[in-house]
Length: 190
Image (cartoon, rainbow, N blue to C red; front, side, top):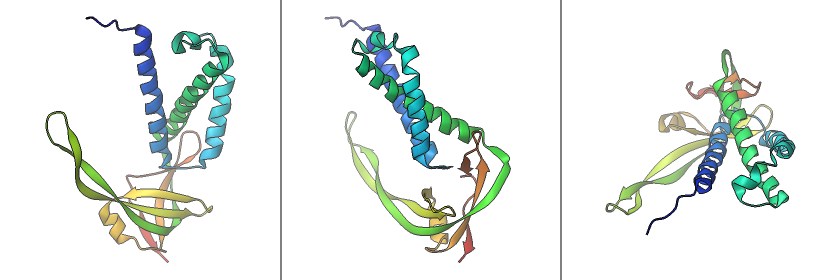
């Protein structure tokens, strides 16, 4: 029995994968960006909503649904993810290294999370393997916001709770500061 592969089904699958990767990429780059997420998401939502009307004719073909509000919701979710990805990745990739400067933050909390390696049982089955620790610190920035950073075990052991740290920050392409991850945090004392 042959199964017919529908072009629209492949297009929907590729589109869903693209939107999911956009959201995951935006979230991962956001962790290295010093900006409040709410204004960025609000602007992306407004742009996504305003771009639905010109694109309204294409969505019934892709979604297979003629109901306009469903297509508007699909367009808003997809366009918001893509716009967030463009903003965060563009800002991070276009960061000007000549604008590097030091910002100070205070270590509010140090903590670890336990994660697990995957272990292959046989050809088709994997299970939870050996545990390992991932090291984090919550940093209170000078403007009062708290930023969570993942770090190596050596850096985690060097830093003390309550101390100030120097972190190297660069101005991003869209003017939002980006934390330079290639320069380790330095303890600035109390």
